[in-house]
Length: 463
Ligand code: ATP
Ligand code: MN
Image 1 (tube, rainbow, N blue to C red):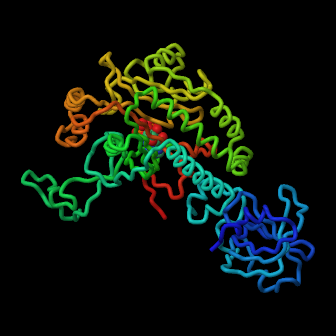
Image 2: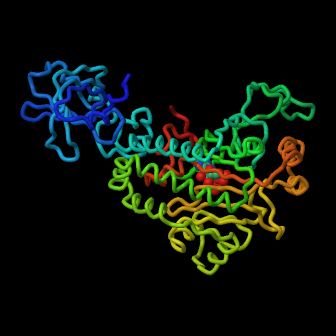
Image 3: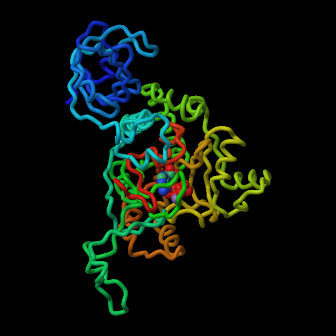
């Protein structure tokens, strides 16, 4: 096991003359005038360690096994590197080959393989430059998320993955069952007898931890959840996954303005953290994937987010009269084309849209005094559109009961959620950030399938 101080990122910090052992996977090997040049990487840093081995130092049989994809340890001394971009390189004295990789079949031979092809070899793509960088950034952003909340006294709560409340209506749900699908137990009217199922009722994979999160906010004040979330939406888009990671803070003593400002501070904090700690990877994305990455991150970090209401947004869109694919009038949900127009062309910075029509938002959002809109917010970013959805929650028992009934939802199913409004209710609010949307934003990667280790999408659950 690599110990702190033994990673390639640590080796880069050591002075010329240090004796070290470097371990990792060979990116490339090139032989020139009796010298072998090996690019070695252990995933700890973007830059490969250059290893130089003179002929006759290491037996020829060993060197033949050192090919792209093989796993090796090299022992030697750090010397000054003539190559640019690195101060030191390793002059190898001995090589141990842990696992060879047959050049005739190793799939990750060439640079410039397409993203589609790399998805088919998701078990090997973390070894590529791009995916090493993506997953280091994903790690750094996740760490920043925990750090942000914990510095503010939030408690991390683990809400369940399996749930029996078809609660949120946030999206289509995956069922969870142990019933024999070839031989389903039937009720008298030929329905399925779910009382015979594992949980004694129908169960699903969660679409959001929010409702459970609210129970904890009304006990521990400020909480957040951070874990996998599932949506069986059959939408094959570059922005949707069937399994994705969501961060959901929930705050007692909080209204929509506080919520909105927290979301803004939160996004800026994540950006600042990755800029501080992972500039090497960000520069790669800026040079090779999208040359606006650094500029837009800096821009977001330094702009005050714009705030407008849904009603104002509709007025702007109607006036723009762009020949929208999805026509706009008060009451329709905003589509990606509208969101991007507002944030990219009108304000040219992040925009928080609040106070949506009650009909297009979830039942739990707090009713405004106009009786038509609810205290919802969406945070829109240039390039991405919606990255955060949130709201102030309805804390009034009678208003909530009326809302659930008017939406034709089963009151019994929400008994515990309603009890929170009966016992010690308080204004509270929260939001959900899709981690993968954030990683797309940070990296400029165009497809959400390329910012999660093993993407689950319609028709695809390999690996
Ligand atoms: P969209 O309109 O983009 O489908 P949504 O309105 O369904 O999003 P919410 O239910 O508000 O989204 O979820 C909160 C956040 O979770 C979103 O802002 C987004 O960042 C993320 N998200 C939602 N659905 C998905 C998905 N299928 N794959 C990845 N991230 C998602
Ligand atoms: Mn959705």
